[in-house]
Image 1 (cartoon, rainbow, N blue to C red):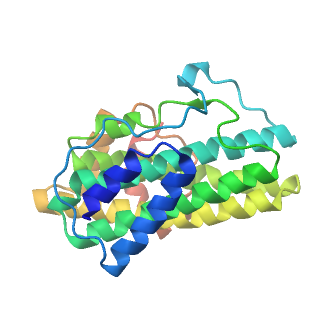
Image 2 (image 1 turned 90 degrees about the vertical axis):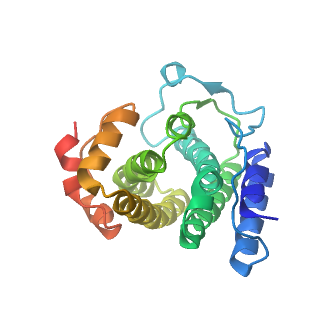
Length: 262
């Protein structure tokens, strides 16, 4: 099996538990050399999805409950699990779509990200079950895959938007979620989010590293190129405050994002 075939297998698997199992298996097989280098291959426009959760436009999503209620915390964990499920597919998509034209280390990095995202989803799924719920029990929004479709033609654009906007935003908002969860005594959820936050630093670092590589290959300056791509392909604004400590750990300097922030 080559890595593109493995990636397409994950992308076309609808059951979340099976998607996690395959992701973790293929990541280990890639690390041991049992899976060969990616080759150019046709990819699905959208990943396979289970019948639940109900996917809604962002504008139609019910408002998330605030405060320390158990229902509100469950809704938060469900929303994060949905993000992680999409992140699994985004990671495999970047490997299969662009990996055949990149150094092996590129695939090494994004297979590791896929493995991390699968582990995160599994962790959050079990957390939902411990709260008397399950993934799919609540509606989720259907906008997360749009960034993949918008940047399917351009690796620089994909790196600019997915790890360096969407995942970097996770670094900004997660610490406050952790503090709030601990405030209401939900240490299990807080511990899970801390793991996710720390892993996301390495994901943003990979995005920044490969974005700079692509820019160097094309003779482009990274900072203005990133700003132009974000303005072109990101449907939204960069929102303050930024977690500059965590972003800096990923090597993602404020000179990239501060000049174009909302």
